[in-house]
Image 1 (cartoon, rainbow, N blue to C red):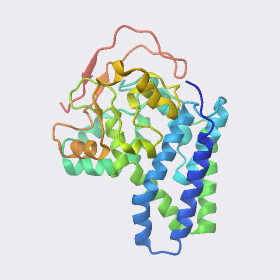
Image 2 (cartoon, rainbow, N blue to C red):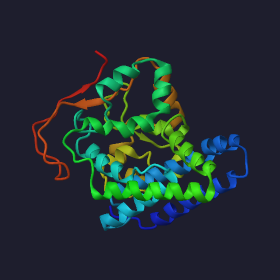
Image 3 (cartoon, rainbow, N blue to C red):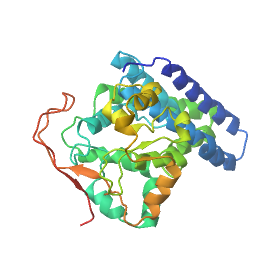
Length: 304
């Protein structure tokens, strides 16, 4: 457990790389903007989202404010001011994992029924997953949505977006925006969003991915390990697994994000309701730690 301050250099390098690629694209056709966003940019922006995740858990610096600043800096390449909102709601996800009214990672019943089991609608849902994730916290009523850090995040990133447009032009903004949209959706790394908590009835609430793309994504696939020990930085997650083989080697895991994505889309037995959901429990005020309660029953959401 601890921090990995060297992550800051990865963040700076990836943001500068994205802006450099965008600058090169200004002299090429729009077709290359789309191609570069899918083949290169999506991997980079997904990696920046993982660094945002590290900042959320204060795994880069000991001082939370420094982690917040680094998270906002990563938004310069993500185009969308998301670091502070992600921080607020992702910590709730850890504290209230699987609880419908407090875990923003759980889809609303309306959203789930709208998507249903249709492969076409699941494709559209995965493609627009970034939009879904941005709107889903609206179902959580007990959290103060706006604070000074969120306002600063929005104002700073919008100012940077305007500066990029003025200095480098619309193709750079389009490249960055497409890279973010694709990283959160129909792309090999998009399988991560299904792998983490969706289930085919195996009874596991979290799943890990141990495939080669972890090398491009700061080991974000080690998701079960992360939920067990959220204070372990990305570079030590494989070590954690090696130290506790009896706990992790016998769990269901995945080796291909693409296969996870295809299975979710085309298997009619799976939907956005295919995850374990806890019954409501007594809870403390957000941010004050998990509350004690009686054992929590579990159920799989279904479409009925």
